Amino acid sequence: MRDLRSFHKSMSRFHLRPGVGALLALLPSVGPSLALAQQPAAPPVEVTVVSTAPQTTPATFEFTGKTESSRSVEIRARVEGYLDRIAYTEGDFVRTGQLLFQLDPQPFQAALDNARGDLARAEAQLANARATLARVRPLAKENAVSQKDLDDAVAAERSAQAQVQSAKAQARTAELNLGYTSIKSPLSGLAGKSEFREGSLVTPGANSLLTTVVQLDPIWVNFGIGENELLRMRTEAAAGRLKGPGIDRLEVELVEANGSVFPQKGRITFVAPMVDQQTGTVTLRAEVPNSRPGSRLLPGQFVRVRIQGASRPNTIMVPQRAVMQGPQGKFVYVVGADDQAEAKPVQVGDFYGDQWIVTSGLSGSEQVIVDGAIKIRPGSPVKIGAPKPAGQ
Image (cartoon, rainbow, N blue to C red):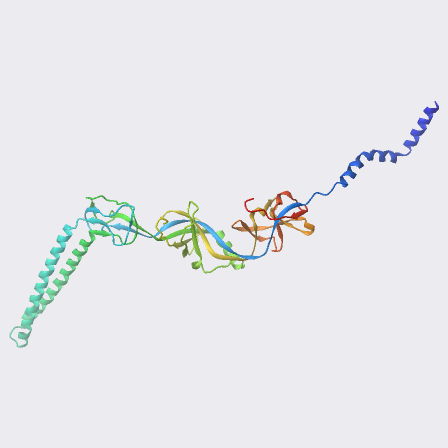
């Protein structure tokens, strides 16, 4: 009994001190917190950085273009005749003055011979009229012949002169028609297929097209600049962020469909004076030398057009992999105070190689984290390491 009373007395003292119980209840949770506080801080993440600095960089603009012959000529018949011979290889390169088609010349040769005969007869009549006038004129001064005889002699001489002029014109026409039977190329270029075969009757007019010859050197490249992009370029130029020579001094580089760069560069020779209402673009044309055998561009090819020669002064660039995308837009990590990572929102523009042009967000004196950025968060401690070799 004595032991039982002692137990109840001790329990009554315990209930009179509730704070002790609460303290005892907290003891199990205090132990792990103290353990966490005693753990060492996480080591800094090793990163590589680039130091930004304003610099002048070339500005290159790329568009899609299509090649076009700088001169295309339809070869048509000027006289009617039977096609004797196709004198060129269809689809082959032809040179200026090269014979393409030969019409039957015999009827035209006969017409020329006849016209020359008429001319000779007219010249003989003129000579006779002049001789008659030479005899009559002195006699008329001596009143040996009448005035009417003199007038008739003068009229006959003038009529003979007119007949000679007419006969010369007819002979010249017959000579031209004979020349038209030999149809030659007016330029050097590629000749298309023949629309007629040997023995066909060829007539001048709407259906007289024989073939087409297209000039390859130089070649034209047509491309368009969108209205919005054109306005952006003008805005950047007005703000001093884009500088360049006159448009006729910019270089044009072509990239073919297989990715190879065409070896010869050209110049812009035409800019449309208005925006195309259907496409919303301004059409430009470049003229490119196309003289190298084996590497010639053909009309109708699609190419990428690179405009070179402009520059961007005071440009800040960072590697493309340094720019990250977040909910609020693009940002980069920079090494801030106490070697901690700091996120900076940026606005970016065009690419330049593997670099991204930063239009706003950086002042040009930051250390931008390139490698290791995916492992950090704002405020994470970082350690700058050596740059990784290319390709890693």
